[in-house]
Amino acid sequence: MPPRTRPSRPPESAAEPLRGPTTPGASPSILPARTPEGKGRPRSDSTASSSAGASRPARGPRRSQTRCAAQPGRVSANDVPNAAHQDPISYRGPSSLTVRPRSELTAKWALPLPYLRGRMMGKLGGDVPAEEARGLTIRDALRGLTVGLFRRGCADNGPAASIVSKEILAEPGDDRGGGGGGGGGGGHPPKDYYFDVDARTDAVHGTVPFYSPRTPGNVVFRLYFEDDPSSTLATGPCVRVVPGDADVEPVLRFVLGNFRARKASGMSSMSSLAHTLELFTPAPPDRRPRGGSFDRGSQYAGPGRAAWGCLCEARKVMETAAQNYVKKREEIREKAEAERLKGELPDLGSLTVDGDGGGGTGAGGEGTKAGDDEKGGDGPDAPGGILPALPPPPAPAAKFASEEYGNERRWREAQCMYAGVLRAALTNDACSVLFRRDMAARMRLEYHLWCPIVEAFAPNPFAFGGKGNGNGDVDPARLLPGDVSRYPQQTTKEHVKMCRASRAAMQREVLGFVPTPDEVTSLVPAGARRKGGGASRRGGGGGTNLFDDLTSSMRRLHEEEYAVSDAVVRRREEVRRAIEGVVTASGD
Image (cartoon, rainbow, N blue to C red; front, top):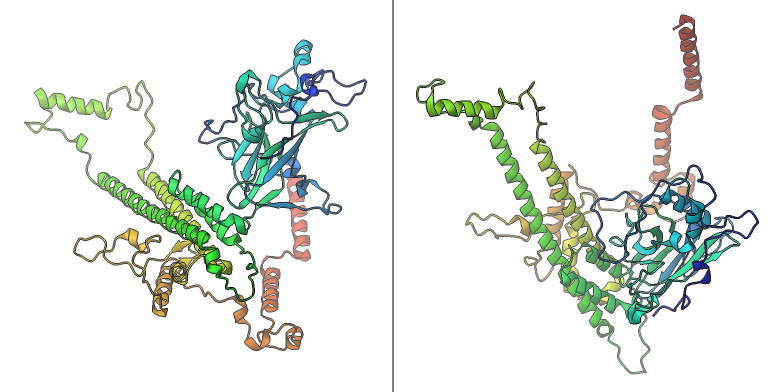
């Protein structure tokens, strides 16, 4: 439980008007004597609740003041400040904080009083009577101020986007719970998180306790107001959550629970799984007495089962995403084909039935007149009528193209997430204690189908049958990643060649060529790769100066094709002066 970092009652300064330094000319209230010019725009007096279930609009304003230099406040995590606010020459402290999952964090924040005064003036708008200004206190200025814990890179603020967010001031009936410092039960008012006014620095500061997330990754603290979450007042340092050896199994089981809960699409769970496998570092083997045996695999049997369960759930997520992608793609194509046929067929509404073949009278004539009215020939909606003409409907092709693009984008993101899981499990040698060899071999076959340039998996070469129509057609969903039911039990070199051939065929179809997977250093001859070779430094080897030759070629191309020499600049200035002289002499 985090330590209680605030007093049992609000600070005495909270009941007093917000004051700056104790000087004879200081303002007696939070507001200045007159409205300052150029202050913030008026804001609503209402403040939003910080509960997790608060509803948010689908599209809000984009987050502003993302650069630390434009933020008026400061936030630190466990006394580690944001390095962007420090002097890069004199500051020698840490630039980030590394903690384990579910560790105690303390966010210390600070805001200058001039900013709070200007914000209150912007909310009230115009000049404020002296009586009303004297009644405003520091609590009025801090109403709605919130500290939130966010994943680094999160685009939005607010409770809907944060891992957890806490307001500085508690509302009546708000139950902080746990380490929050008191609830609203027993008729007692809730307690606020600690804050105080520092007249020496003309600022207000406070602390809020947190816990680090259960899953690994990079998180940051952000300070903002609930009624204006798009404006970031302060950003804390990067907090890296790295699970230790004892935390791996609880983290994997937590991720497995999120997979099985099916509360979301599963993309965030796959990201957490990839981070966990990438950061996994087993502890050194325990010391055993002489003559005793130590089975390292049995030590990680629990984490291995949890990791394999997470991988199977990730495959289920990919299989579901593949089925949804194919189904949505077929629906879009059918709708587009229907619209195309509708455009090619004649307009049946313009056809009329007439027994005499002419305008006629009776039912046919009335029907013709009704058809004329519907077409708007003489109606009020016709050009020049009473009502203006209706705008044409949007082109169906553009709507279908937008839906298809969204479908492709979601499928590409899912493939990138799943490829990240496979890459983390295969590139981290420590994961060999979590997965058996046959498991790793099957994952390696899947990863051979991945192309990072195309950002897609090649078709599954082991898929066959599926539709059951007797024509030997293959279900498109079985060609996509996630379904490993057709993969061989024992992996051989021929299976690896099949996967690489499928990937090469996809690359040739999409890119027009097959990228070489070799490293750039393979272009240098083997005899010239020795570090510090004399031929390499003197330029005697044929391929030793590959990168130097490439750099000189790029520099020569820039000078010949793109660079502007001094002679060209002088000629341009002479031409400009000559044209100006001609225009001036013409008198126009």
